[in-house]
Image (cartoon, rainbow, N blue to C red):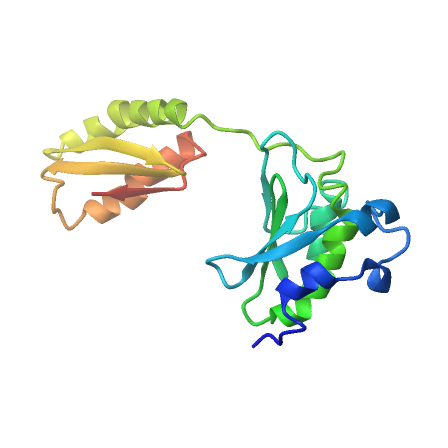
Length: 213
């Protein structure tokens, strides 16, 4: 349980950067540090806290998520947060930073160092080596997937008296429907994994899996 005086919600508002800041830290600015106000908000995930910052973090509606330390040249802010034992995820958005911890770690032990890290490096969320992730057009990928299914998969399955129909593609997962002899066939799972999924992942690297409905 969090004590009334040591909960993350009070730490965010009452934290005094003069008590724990490190001189020369990346992104450190005494003027900015003194003026910065932030507060912590609970999220549906008990291992994540949303730290709302009283200034802009990311520009233009951009967001970025790190689940491993990115290196100071990629994100000084995320690297500083990952240096705290127990931090396993950092999400940067317009005016907040969401920090995720390991389940066995208590927020009481992380609140102050996390608040200190955000205050010290919020001015440098991204470094010179950061490369924005490539935004993949799912409609374009869906067309490529459909072409592979129509030209390679369906003719092979038709030889066994069945059919495979493309249903959709979302967040890396292809959805198909079996018809004819393939519908309810005990070998359909093997066909799906070793045949259809393997071929799609080979030709369309963005595919992470295939499910049948």
